[in-house]
Length: 325
Image 1: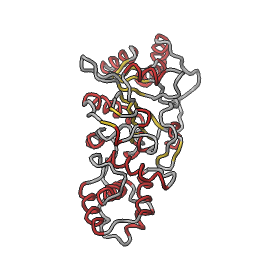
Image 2: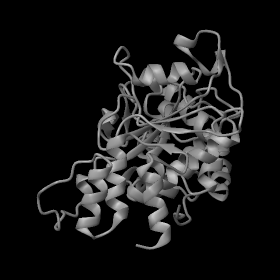
Image 3: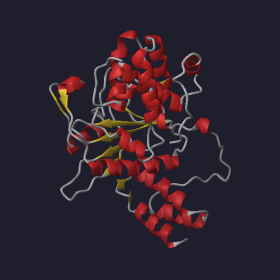
Image 4: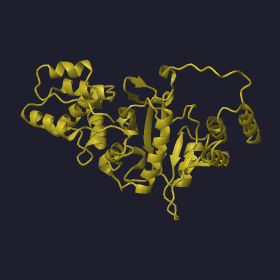
């Protein structure tokens, strides 16, 4: 066992790695991953750490991504300070939980990542939700809560218009990037459009993580989705002359992932899209630039969708090739 792996195992055995505080059952799984192939060394270390190990032969494992529970990552804010956030997310008195909680920045300048629920277990963070044709996203997602407190007139019924959103602390975002990098190593099949906010999957009920969350910054570091500027301008020029129909806009939003449960929900969905991809203007109305961002995003990530192909049969503004993450 080389020195780097030995040091990694020691830190995992202490229950912490890269600023992340792990649950004991998670430590056991990570220890098993990093010790290597030596069955004797693995069993000895797991026993010392109080972990159980399977007595059954696990030398063959089924390889099918269709069996992977984790298909998306949902980002939230807590709207509470650290102590209250931990209480709400861990006490059986409250029907909410998340896999991870990112603390505020301490006086020493550090942010902690708490793992509150094991990744192979369901956390109750999404609520009534829909994304990419799926509902009940608690079953198929990892929830990440960030301690962040916008000033809202009525915190129990937050709206974009009635809240003041401060900037996120860059140190929180940096530690979030560390966590996302770790997660995507374990779940490489999570696609860019599957890293979204609570407001994306539940736009009628939720507005977190809010318009100040730095989605583009994350995209530029390899996490999440964003449209290409040239495609945006190409569609914007065309839509300034002639807008797509409401049905074409709804189909494009659906192809991206947004679930429109009823026609009356459309303004909420548009606001959620704007908060994510055009955060300087959140109106709930589809103007030429909003439509351009919607169609540019679909062209980049979902150009094989039938609705995109049909739309582009008579639209010269369609073009370009999808860009890798």
